[in-house]
Length: 231
Image (cartoon, rainbow, N blue to C red; front, top):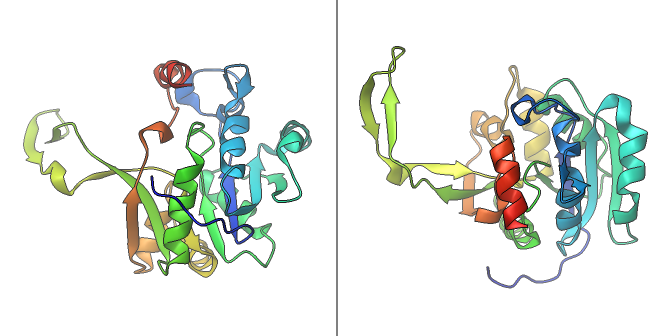
């Protein structure tokens, strides 16, 4: 990736981390599952905090583990990066809203990042922040789809082949002007798992930037094994 100017202090990053992650199997909430002896959340926050633009990180933790998560993350806090932990909600959307409400007023750029994308490089955080800073109201990192995609009916029979050249796989962090993200959450009438989708419904153009293979989402035990190898 290209080099970025060092702009410290104008970006806040929200990390919803209250979900259980049932596809990863039984155990602790997904963000607290271990990768190389540390919770996924620790890896994710450490990499986000290393991005020069980031001045605040707000983690939405399981409601019964706020104090424990705050204590766990305390070593990652610094004079340059404020680290706040709030109680998350019953859904990802509710957790993002709770974290957004806790962002100090001076931050006009807000990124939303999945703790499950624990190996996301700081350079990707900078790329997204730069695009928002450059005038885009909503920005998402994407990768081209490399598999052939089939459309099937309810019985599992193929009804068509989708043109993959116009498809993209979406990653995080997703970036927004603060007013755009606030308006998107205020206008939401149903549940979304993607904040950019909420902005789309408001008619906000969503700009794309190149994603990173390292920003894979750890959802299943197989993904965790792959992340161990990538680490």
